[in-house]
Amino acid sequence: MSLIDKILIRDGIESDLDQITDLCKNIWDGHDFLPSVWNNWIENNVGTFVVAELKNQIIGVYHSYLLGSDSWLETLRVDESYRRQGIAKYLLDDYLERSRYLEAHNVRLVTSTKNTASRNLFTSNGFDEILYSQYYSLDGKYIKSTSDPMEFSIIDDSDEIYSIMKNSLIKEDLIPLWWRWWPTNSIALSEFSKNAFLIIPKLKPSSFIAVQPSKNFGYKNDYQILFFEMSTNIFDDAMSFLKNQDPSITLNKIFSIPKVNSQQLNILGESGFKQSTNLVVLERTLNST
Image (cartoon, rainbow, N blue to C red; front, top):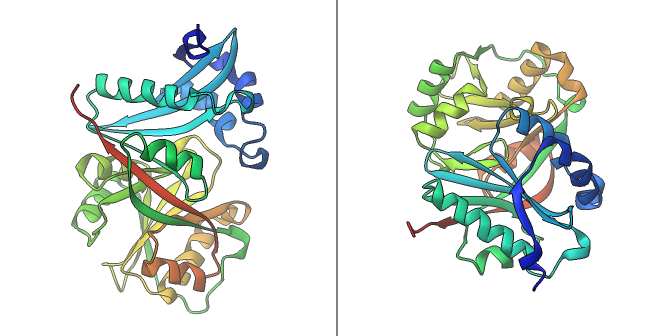
């Protein structure tokens, strides 16, 4: 009997946390976010955790999240002692099978462009690399305080946010809700509107910054931002306005994940944001069988 034949696949439960923490201890230099969201996502039915178990030891895990007819795969992890033995492929096949059962049409994930092993796994299993992005972040304490800033308003009504987003000049095929990218359709925009607020300059209402508090996704209290039709000066004023509205932001992080070669990268760089990880979103369209 092969190693794969001995593995038990089951849904993750809260009591798995200690083993998950141990499995993730060396991932991202010991800063893997997975253990910190484990119980929160299970308690709040945020998608599904699936674990691979061998002799009562968890040796692999992934998380899936369904939105409309699209599914998102994340946190695919394999214990260091069991890598290169086909377990990641086994978990991926399980994920694809479950996604078909749930009638998902497209499946997606994101990984670092430096993660060659991960990219090879997915591209060799029918995934295409469809979007390249760059992660930019800024500690809130470094937000510039601008002199004579323009006036802004905050929109936090989900229906109004939905209307503004739908009628804006968003030309992107995909929009990130936290670290998950979805088609820019009514389902994703509705979900986005429930988890964000907008900062809009009163003299230029066609511009806005969309702010997603990461606590709405069960992780820390950082702010993810998307912005549209905005100059560097307006962006700096908006960030200063945000800091004045919520001084606690100085204790947290602001981040954005714009597309490679977009004008947003220049604005973020000019405003003091630091670039780190380069990312790639991969997608596969599923057949009905």
